[in-house]
Length: 274
Figure 1 (cartoon, rainbow, N blue to C red):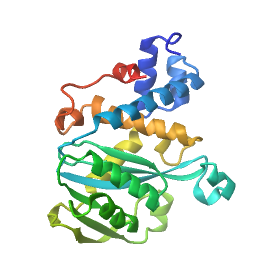
Figure 2: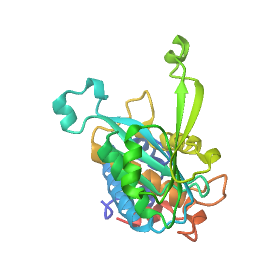
Figure 3: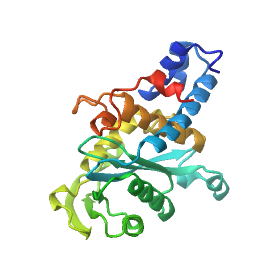
């Protein structure tokens, strides 16, 4: 593919993917066939996943907020048969770790919202940290055992549980989130700063992810049909977010703020990873 498609065309297509443009829209804008755009996105995304695994090591993070982003492959879980679910269709969750100080997303795992994938995510997160951190999660039951298994007592861990009210008929029709009626915080391990037990910033980062990964845009037909394509799209997003896109708050890329990069990468650098 690289021998046929000019680099400027590849950069235009990958850049558009990173900014949340649909594959068919990219086809119309660039004249590149949608199948070529798809293969290019998967190839670059898989290379970005390998880079993330290699570079995101010995990180100086002090605080991490963790959350899960919902999506689906092919069809929603309630509409998928057991055979289709066994083939990878149905709900898919992206576990995300987020550093509110550097804005870095040091760890992510794509899978089911179960203990196996929760443990994989927390273990991956723990393996990338340089020193003791304060970790905040929601109240999902799988987190407590996963954190104990991955960190032991070497973490300051707290959970925040938000209680939501029932949405009105109008809010349900408009797909509005329900209102938070109460917030409870719990210390599970160590001595976390209770004021710092929060998932607000990682939830805001999840919005950034939905805006930049077209497959996560709600109420559209842009959802993934294959799990491997979804994984590649998520990997491409986090490489672009961490290393290429300048963050408006810190006026640098998160990787630069965390000290693991001296300057921003370009989209062409991501393509060159393949």
